[in-house]
Image (cartoon, rainbow, N blue to C red; front, side, top):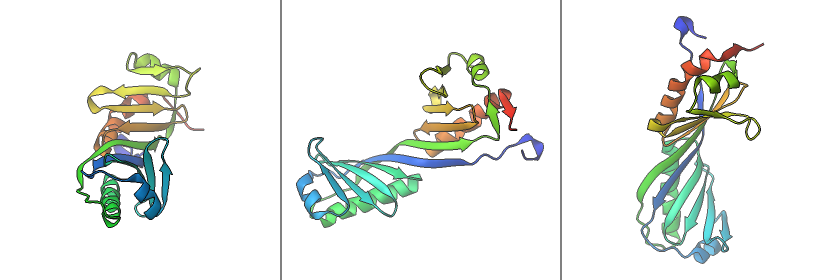
Amino acid sequence: MEPGGDVALDIIVSNVVAVFRVRCHLNLRTIALEGLNVIYKPEVGKVLMKLRKPKITASIWSSGKIICTGATSEEDAKLGARRLARVLQKLGFKVRFSDFKVVNVLAVCSLPFQIRLIQFAKNNRPIASYEPELHPAVSYRIKHLKATIQIFSTGSITVTGPSVQNVATAVEQIYPLLFECGRALR
């Protein structure tokens, strides 16, 4: 802990999911035959394409909708999406990049203490739900931020939300509640 009671927590963004459209019909067979790092899934009606930098995987549908996963920041997600659109353009499609939106951010954070999950779940009913027979974590939902937090007894938390800002705000809001139910590491 830092002086003054403030704690600096490292929130590590591990996945950013973004969607965008290219506003043209895409021939998946052409992409599969001529593109690089491509996996064609005709039974699902999509193509998976991987980029190395930034490291993303894209699911491409013939309608022109594309979902990018695997980026570690919103900027990397946008850069990867634009690079993907450029690759499709070079394959001969009349691509127009539009409707880019980050839809989900997954982040992890390790707290400097363990959590008493049963006590936390009791203190924060009905927002917190804990079913140890089904999952080892307490699920805590912050509706106005559209964020969901999975809290483990080890002090590790996983946060999903619509943006990096919402994820950071969710961690700030839940920290005092977790601190009440924490116990020192041995």
